[in-house]
Length: 333
Ligand SMILES: Cc1cc2nc3c(=O)[nH]c(=O)nc-3n(C[C@H](O)[C@H](O)[C@H](O)COP(=O)(O)OP(=O)(O)OC[C@H]3O[C@@H](n4cnc5c(N)ncnc54)[C@H](O)[C@@H]3O)c2cc1C
Ligand code: FES
Image (cartoon, rainbow, N blue to C red; front, top):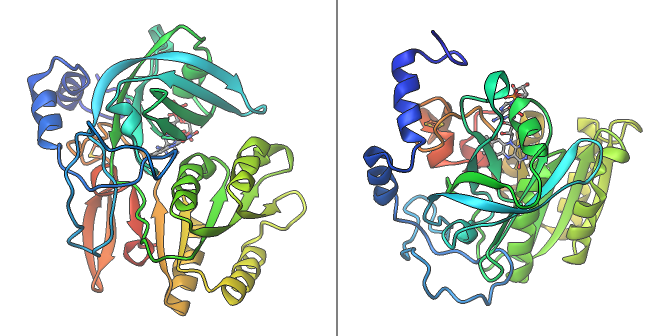
């Protein structure tokens, strides 16, 4: 019998991974207790006291990057409300480890439906916010299939099994003055915390928000960027302004006006290809948070492996552990 295309042997391994009592899981999580110092989401002045992280420098590009220690635990739902017809915003009371999540990291959520509606695998979800002081983690998610539909039915007071924070998040250079963020649809969820970290580092930003329509633009997220002092430009499918050549024109103007230090995006392959091309043309740094199909989220099943390029040579990487945030220069777009 197969579940979502995975043979029975792998199914057993993965089921084993998803139980916190699994010695394999505990060993794996313990082994992952290494990371890089990073600024907490809400404020650069938050205390690092008690954080279970080590201070290291990235061997690859010598910038500070953030990785918090993951935890497999039960969180309490405080709110789970519709933002518009497609998206819900969920706020959870979570463990101290979960609340250390950094911009660009994600959680693997055990969506709670039963019977034929039960999704066999967890579903990856970016951290939309994490506040160690309030003990809260937030997600912004689009209801697309059975996993997110199950999430959407949870009420305040229900519990949810969350594994994370997972993966490697965004990196910011302390000497950067201006960054550009290009967010399409649900990519907003991943990029809004990056904007908060940039603001905490006194880095100015221009944000391009792209969506199907005015209705799909997620006004609360737009306001969240504006509150951080970002200049926000919008692009929509329904008035033709989100065409790739239009976005390219906007980006070229921003590059001339602000000489940005870095370009950031999430998810969309066509935006990633555009940003990679412009970043290479203008010698600008850039990062992308990739959204690949995932199963374990822990680097074991290889489901999320993709080909990247380094020094002109192809190289395989697992998006869940070596990413999900990668340098634009490495991505094969
Ligand atoms: C690192 C990461 C972070 C993510 N963060 C968010 C987020 O913050 N908010 C959000 O709404 N979504 C996010 N996603 C996408 C989210 O995981 C999928 O929408 C979710 O798994 C769909 O599950 P489902 O059971 O509801 O739908 P399914 O029935 O599994 O799928 C519905 C549709 O979504 C597609 N899909 C399924 N999984 C993914 C995936 N991993 N990436 C892209 N498309 C997928 C399927 O191909 C199908 O077309 C993220 C994905 C990754 C890998
Ligand atoms: S999802 Fe299993 S290795 Fe990445």
